[in-house]
Image (cartoon, rainbow, N blue to C red):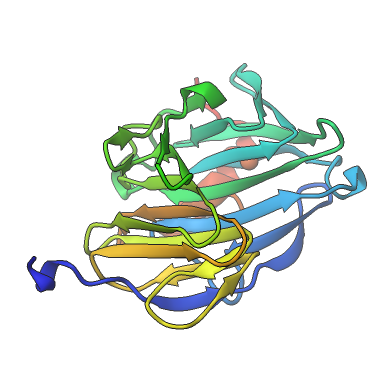
Length: 286
Ligand code: FE2
């Protein structure tokens, strides 16, 4: 084995999610797009929403725009009903993913609803490179049974939303940032190792249980986001109880970022243009 190509990544940031209110009054946990962590190139925002109390989310996210980014919604429980001004409508149910490329502009609403009293999910924003910021909007809607899973002899289950885990290729394809998006469930005391290309950004969002995410003695408890530093692979080991986390990685764009709410462009002038388009009614183009 060539040691130079086999160095493990270590945790460089441990982020405690912040409670924020978004949309028309949805209480959620935010780990990226805060004062602590503005962005993690190419990832611009990461939210974990979910509550046993519908009053904390039923107001939802009424009609709002996006430009210059992709939004990725992954549901664990409940449903998000969505509708946009281009005429697209549908719902994202438990176990499903919607990978939406907003491109030059989308105006939509996202309304969480409970199922059997529960609602929980995640939203990730992925940046688009300059050359694709004004691309045509696109949806990839992936049903639960279309997300391939890698089930291992030790009982661990890895749902492959994007990227690759061993020989299993994810359901979402053709995304510029070359992302990996895995939902990893580990039984107690089992370990998962995953290679990540050098130079790619990698983080995990731990949302159930606790475990170790590098060679140190540090145990990370849910809910926390960890950022890994440079290296060739990551490892996660569950403590005495089952561990569940999202493993997300992608290629940094290293381009200037000008952000204003739901718009993420390269310059202030482009943000001002987005606001003008919104005012003039020219934001959404068929
Ligand atoms: Fe949205």
